[in-house]
Image: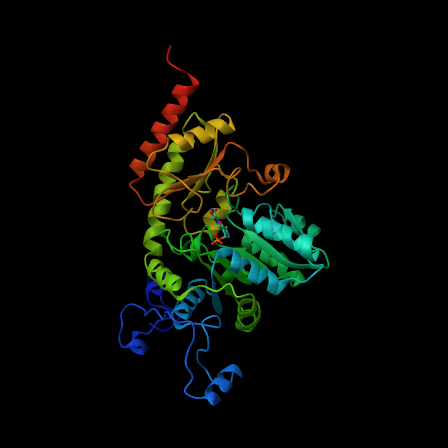
Length: 403
Ligand code: LCS
């Protein structure tokens, strides 16, 4: 089987690494070094001039980090990838690359809270405007594209409302105007969704999540469809702003990636079962899981994603205090932000991940005070369900105390 023809489950284990180049070491080595020695002054000069291949300094490239970058580029079917110290560093690098003062960014109806914070900062400091829009129709997208629109930025599914965007549709319209499309693929991982073959130009990941899978790394990845553009980002935005990934974090992510398909299958399987349970519960007012047939994005999810993901948001039928009380009653399911870990995690977006967003904007995005986001872990689904069930029972007992 030739290069680039391997199946996904094989690529996560093998791509970007040849043990023959590393003394036969089965596990990719950890090059925990800040700098690289030159044989002589002339070699240093040639490396800096780009006349000789080779490493210089770990902010400009590191062999362990490079293995991860090559593997991620292959998994997302891009030309090249760059690893960053966090998902936000990857998001800011691609935005700094694409926009300049006075430009306009068109965004999906919702985005992660810190992405919102970054967009606000860009507006305040550099007069870069943005609009959050419903991207469900061609006309809707076209109507808000302005002459200074220099980027379309999409999350799908959107954190935390689980609304999906039809990527092929958006990329078709963007192509007519020659506007680059950036997709935050954090919620899916490349196993469930690959935006570049659908027409996107850049994919970003908070690698902290499913790519890592074990809750022990904060990292980000940017993948691009153009080697030239990505090399430019490497030698400008990444090098000079400097939010790079450490070799040790890259090493952990290479290790985590090997089990990505196996983990994702289990996350998705568990989430589908928990979603069924929640959708039948009388204390759940609304459930947002794209794998349920009556979800607004079910049709897009079925064609765009391999499976429906491991995240579920749901609204408690009650008050904000009841939603918080429900969280407090949970035992095994941990109260924590982040997602994609082996452990099931629950958080309250209105007061946690999306609390920076003003109430009226949050309301337009569909983030209510009773909305909870559950990242379904890898535990036995019955144990997750039992924990949710006992917390609901306590909530019910509190609402209707025994006489
Ligand atoms: N994009 C998405 C969709 C995210 O969910 C996050 C983090 C980021 C980018 C930023 O990545 P980071 O810098 O944290 O690696 N999302 C979080 C969340 O929902 N809970 O805690 C962090």
